[in-house]
Image (cartoon, rainbow, N blue to C red; front, side, top):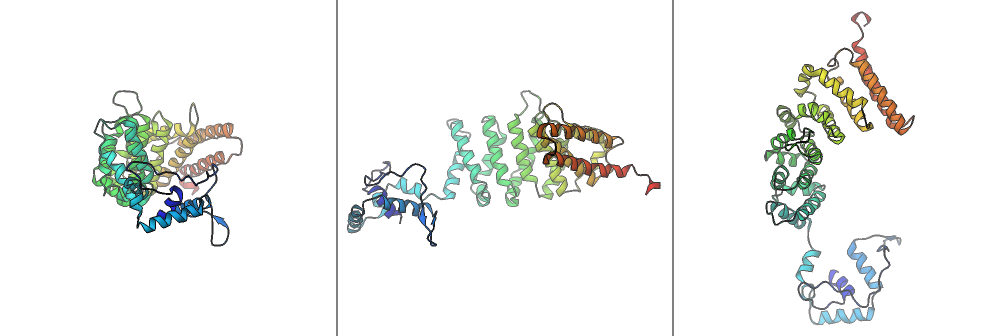
Length: 379
């Protein structure tokens, strides 16, 4: 069918290498934006695969007698598709997903080559990232030799911050909800190497500090690597990853970093309540309480999402350690929650669903904290 389609479109003649596929002189132009429709088995118009659509359109807009003569000529001369179409054109037509991945990985592998333009490398990584959303492609990343160079590129210093952030993004997409790929990245020392770069995300401007873009993608990748993996979460705890999220990430100057750090803490504690992190909270409960209250109440350019994530984390901690916060926390949380509620209604309107959600989360936390105020005589 491919040969027939190309004959219809191009009234094919043998083409020199590199010459683009010609458009047949007998074809009438198709109106811009007009979909290629075919007739479905039930008689209704419907979309089919692109080759059928192309053939259908080409036949309707071609000279039947001319096509008949051309097909007879090719049959008489025993011509095949390779006799009339350049090899490069055929290779492009029959390229598989694996071929595309290999080509993109080949560019990444060459990232140390200074002659490779930054925009060319970025384009390859972006295309690779898009393909890695497909779970089978993600599973082939390491087998095809693409995971190690992505990691080296992301955490090295040979390329721009933007390019390294894109590499982190591609890695983060690959490991999302994909246990085998998570283990492959871990086998390359991925967890330790990623954790080693967290101190660069301190938020203060200095020569050693990483950009918010890089730090956001770093946390995104760590989140994908750690989710639903108990052993990796335990190892991350030993490396101080979650202490950093709580002590530094949750206080970062950039809201996007804060939300990613708080969200990761909430997710991990929901999946692994036995993390030693919980045993360490008591020693720094005042600092943790101050951080949570600041995030709930907000300041400056208030953000609903930050308040919501902070309240979710407070509720998560209370569900695991109801007595972890000291005296006065209940009242302080009520005040911070009221401030968040007022800001939300001012921004989104009274009765907004998001504002009601904040009130529900605050009420849930207050009920747990209220139980601490009940004396033994009242029980």
